[in-house]
Length: 260
Image (cartoon, rainbow, N blue to C red):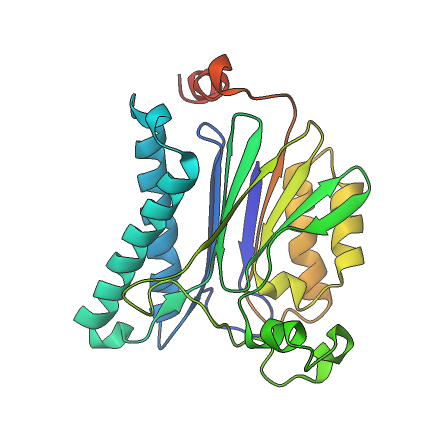
């Protein structure tokens, strides 16, 4: 795993947050929104709350008794309630919220949850595929046939999301499970990357740097900035190097190597 984030060339602060934990097979990314500093708070709180909560649940002996999808759904709901409560309690945080995309790797599968327009992509061989579908006004217009995807450049509200964590007492989260294969590379990213660079450029950058994920992450940041860097940029990359069945103790062995 590798991750990177950058303020970009025009913004004065970074409202994107990203975290990875190879020992537990978890990657999280959030793109905050709101008033002064509130976006930083919303994304930072969300990533910290979810990482702490998921790691604790994955470490419990009773974890196999409950599906991972239901665990992820519960932890997202808890985080939403806390962020929403903080926004109500402190006027400077009123209206804050954040997008979310997370991935948990377990038992040769990837469980993905997302809210808003931060995305998950998969590079399998030479095929680069978006696995999430944006919760945005633009995407709704496309789905309803009002706009074609070619009209994105002229659409004035393309960054207006229709779902965000922390804005309402409850939030709807999309959760999907996909089989993972050895050699897969997964990209979590904020719209600071996808609004700047084309899908083909993103794919080519990852493919060329696929043996060095840290270099690939930094190259994606540079790519977005080279195209203007109008927004904060956050990326996380995960490569599947070998099978990870649940019974193998794979993540426990990683943990011992990393933290012993």
